[in-house]
Image (cartoon, rainbow, N blue to C red; front, side):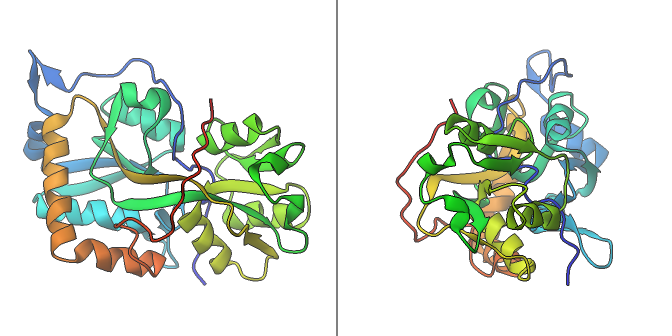
Length: 281
């Protein structure tokens, strides 16, 4: 079985974060974001290495995953090497803001204050949010309103934890914990629920079938998409990346990579109609 690491530390979707400081990608008003990459022949990418199946280490101790494979193929088509630097979520965002990384690849979405400083590439994954609960009793949860008084697990400052708190849950925070720890804690009652991305949860539950947890059926919310997180003024780099992603979508490469990790094509909008929208504010 694959080595599975923290899929819930992020979840990168919707983290509200304002980084400080940073270097500018522009000189005298000129956007040199792509020129910098082209001259170095290297695209520097921030990621976690702990987010299954987007960015994690396989049985051969090799960094792999959906986001990792997609950006590696993008770099290949742009004729540059790719260098990965590993951080937690806050570290990834800070590294892009400071210019230590050209972009972040870790199932990132964009909302809240993040949109003031960053932008996303074209979407590489469409999804929606869901909740993991105990198999035996659904953790006593049948709706978002039932989160009141429940113990919600996740990494601090994520949008998921903010939503849980909004609905009255008690927060139990982790830092780069592994999937089995997250799921086992729900199963044994240390926690009750994990809010996160549906496909990440589906893969994690499927990879650890002996832990008695499940995704709560038909309680889905916040249809969303994710991409690569890029500094807002790196327009030239963004255009290059989007051009490569468009080629990959057209020639079937995105579909092939997606099906490798998700057994379905997450690079197109899902068939499920998710209309409920939940704000963390």
